[in-house]
Length: 68
Image (cartoon, rainbow, N blue to C red; front, side, top):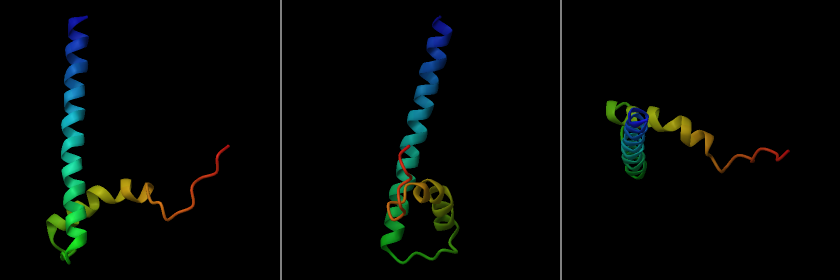
């Protein structure tokens, strides 16, 4: 039982750190959208590649899906 608890605690910490790092990536993407960053820059292209799929799926400009 202790092994399972430690495994779940480790998984929780890994998820926490992943989400923390991803929030920093999102903040960096927001900052690069305010300035005129060169899209051919490797860092800027990484930020866009890492954040575009989730941001595209959360777009509020599209019509929401119908509720069944």
